[in-house]
Image 1 (spheres, one colour):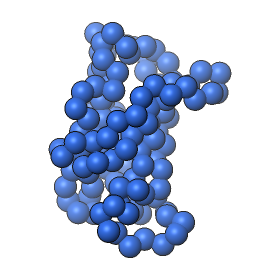
Image 2 (cartoon, one colour):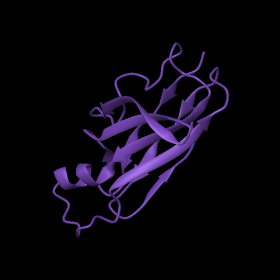
Image 3 (tube, rainbow, N blue to C red):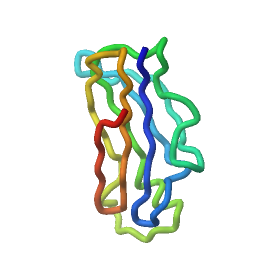
Amino acid sequence: MGKLSTHVLDTMHGRPASGVRIALYRIQDDRRQPVKTVHTNDDGRCDGPLLGPDEIQAGTYELVFFAGDYFAAQGVNVPEPRFVDQVIVRFGIANPDENYHVPLVVTPWTYSTYRGS
């Protein structure tokens, strides 16, 4: 069985992003249903999968990364409103037997994501 995981890399400072709040939602009928909220650890990862083998289902999901709050906590002086604040990644899980890894690479001015394994 598969799982869903993530991690966050702060490329402004060249390190894992520790303490980033991440909210996971399942999207059904264009409505967000909260699944869980976690924070990244010192390695920029979550302490466990966002969805484990017994939880993962096919469907549409959103990850909301609170990147603006993270950079503010790091003392980064960015103008208000923040250019990159909440990064929302909507993605689909087609096969729950596979691993889905959705990392975020972020600065206060840009971000990128991809599907890892």
